[in-house]
Image (cartoon, rainbow, N blue to C red; front, side):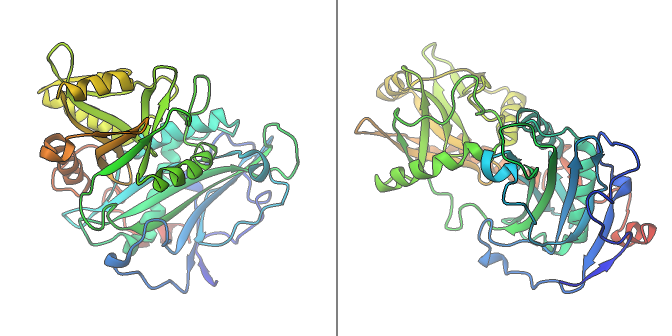
Length: 398
C-alpha cells in the first residue's frame, strides 16, 4: 500500500525514539504518512459493526528504559509480532470503545473521550503496561479522525467507532512485565446497533457462570475478560436468549448484561420510584454510558438514583409485587438495550419494560440528541479546534 510521507520517513521503533526516555508520547511530535490509494466507503445501510475500517491508523511503541516513540499516523497495515510476544501467551492486552459523530451542524465530535482515557490508563496499570498522557492520545486520535473525516457517516443513525488498543510485545516467554509495548488506534464506520428497530432482549441468568469476582479484573477493559464469555453467549443462544445476565455470589447478585452495564427502574420497598445500578465494587466495568445516564437522571431530579447491589430474590419479589417498571443494559454500542424476559432456574420472568419503556426511550433519545449535536453539550469534544484544518497541520509537519 503506497503512502504520501508528510514528515519523517518511517523508521524502526528504536530509531524513532526521542533522544531521552519519554514518560509519554506527545501530539506535537506526531508523524503522518497518507494513504495514496484510499478505499471506497461502504454505504450507510450496509454497515456491519466491526467489519469496516478507515484508511489510516495510529501507532506508538514503547521500550523499557527508552520510553515512547513518536506517535505515527499511517495507512492501516498488519502488525508484525514475534510469535513469543507476551500478548499472544499471557493476554497482556486492553482496549477501549469510543465513538465520533457527524453532528447536526456538520462538524465531527467525540463523546467524552477523556473518560475513556481514565479507564484505559487504569487498565494499563493493572496490566503492568506503561502509563501515558491521555490528553495527548486524545489529540492524536482527533488528528486521525480529521484525516479520515470522510469516513464519519453523514447519518443520525451511524457513527465512527474508535478502538484504542494496547498490547505487550516483548518476544519472550515468562509471566513478567513486558519490556516492549505497542499502542494503536483503529477507526471504522458503524451502523445502528438495532438495524431493525429498538428490540428488547431475553437474558439467561445462570449462577453457574461468573463473569468477575472480588479482587479480579472485572472493572478493567481487557480482552481476557471477554474471551471466556463467548461460549456462555452460545449457551444462552441455545436457550433462546440474546444475552447473559451475569450473577455473582450465593445470593445471585445482578452485575452486568452481556457486555453492558445493568439498570433497574422500579418502585423500591420504601415505595420510592428509583433507578438502580450495581455499584463500582470491582465486579463492574465503569462504563462511560453508565456514568452519563446516572448524571442525566440526577440532573432531572425526578426519582431516586442509587448505585447499590440487587439480587435475584429481591428482583423476583419486586416482579411478583408489580413494582418493576423497566430493566435495560447500557453501553457505547447501543446506548440502551431494553430487557423483556429473564430465564432463571427454568423460570421465565417477564419484565414489563416494553409496556411503556418511558425511561429507556427517554435515555436513548436524550443521549443520542447530545451525541448528534441536536442538544449542545460539553460532553461532545470537537475534532478540529479553532478552525484548524487538516491541510494546515499537514503543511506545518511537512
